[in-house]
Image (cartoon, rainbow, N blue to C red; front, side, top):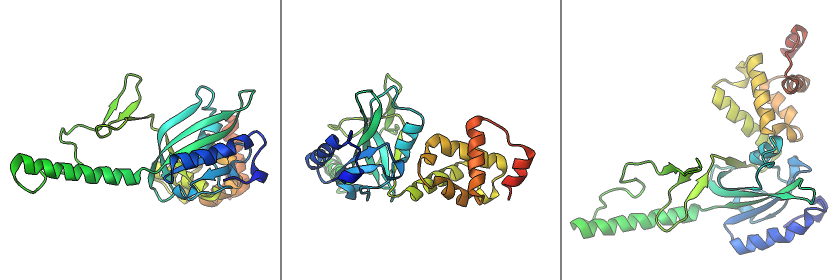
Length: 273
């Protein structure tokens, strides 16, 4: 459901579609309409929000920010079957369609997130039962000859299709899922989203923010800017607190990164305050 006061006129016609798809696809599928006018509160309509814990007013995801910041919608109209994760780390299967106006400008995102955890558990149980029955038939022993979650062939369950996209093989009778490595975190508030970005970059570099030198801080600011995190209101203050520097220093770093400039000795001295 959506709040009419928060939805731009161009997106209002899509609100009934959110409700329709939510009922059609069922309880385990979340349908989300996101507006690009305010990434801090981009969710303007949502069905089955219990899947991610989000509601109207939640922020854009890290993926939406990256897509917008890097204009990844210029040469495609949608993304399908990529990995999404709730804030608790529960995996889901996600797809996003870019909504455009008559001038071909992206005005919003229609996202569908499917929690297939129940199906995975059921499939695993069925494979275990099948292996058990097969073992009895083949050897007369009541014990499975191998675990259901292992690949008897010893091969990885991934392959590459003729287009170079990674293809995940699924049990017989299911459609394969094609992914380009895209991932998404479904954050419920803007501050958590910013902190998740910072934690990711800290983990990749293996150095805590308080121990970073100026070059490392600039690199983090550049990476955060590329990810689109500064499209979120209040992100500068959150980043400043995480790095142990002032908000004006973050703004200065951000200006230097975007202009490709080196700071003067006086600015370097000031940045340490």
